[in-house]
Image 1 (tube, rainbow, N blue to C red):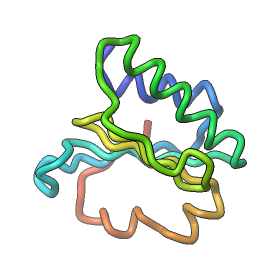
Image 2: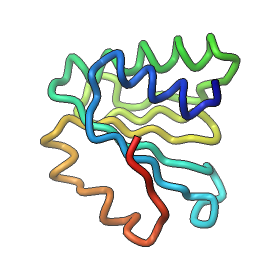
Image 3: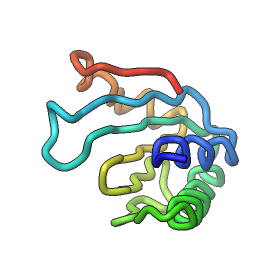
Image 4: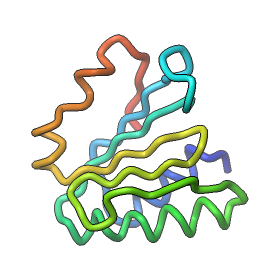
Length: 108
C-alpha cells in the first residue's frame, strides 16, 4: 500500500467522512498532498492520532509530528502528506477547502 492508502484506511477506522485529497505539489515545497477529513466528535478526532501514527509507521512510513491531539482540528504531518482532521463544526468554521479552490482534488 502507498501512504495515501494507509492514511485513508486509518481514517476509515474512526469512520471519518468527506475525505478529500488535494494535490499540492505545485503549491507547497513542504508536502505533495493534503488530505482533509471530518469526524463527528472530539473522541473520534483524538482516536485519529493513534490510528494514523500506528498504521503509517507499521506500513514503513514516518510521522513527523502530530498537533491538536485533543482538539477539533488534528494535523498529522506524514512528510509527503499532511492530514487535517476536523470535527464537522471546525471544518465548517475554518473552510480550509476555500484556500485550495485552484488545486486539483479528488474525493477518497
